[in-house]
Length: 202
Image (cartoon, rainbow, N blue to C red):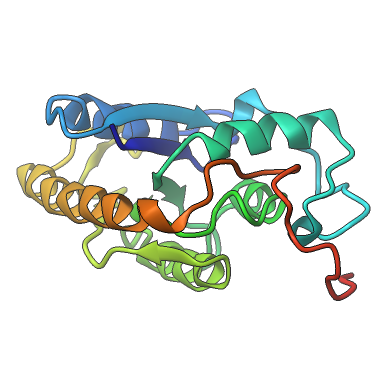
């Protein structure tokens, strides 16, 4: 069965991202069309990118990178739950994405964003980033307004229309993740034969 990781893209104290991710999971698991699991960045405590070589080399030296690689490799697609900070996603999520390369490739992604304006700009930024990693992002997305979909900006109270949008988004995500599955090699990650000759990066 297709496996979808629901990535909580914030590690901030008092975050609402975990509640949003659990709302997504609660609705998703009722579908029965895939396995949906939460992936909490806070559980991995990734430091600011500290690998000596670019991720495209596939030569990881840190235990935290190996653990992150194993977790991400296990999925066929992702729902990225992202806040919007200054017209972009969180630094923690961008950093976590940058730790890996091949583990993301030829997989599908969808976005549930939240913020003053629904977090739409954070999702758009993520589309650009993930495109470089050969991640196919679906068109449908869910945008939650801190004004309209949260009580006192902290308690999630999504409008009914968001459940309909989430259904369409997950339909697209599972379809694309299934279609892309034959393109991926059986094993990925730090020891998957990733190219060793990569340009130097700062």
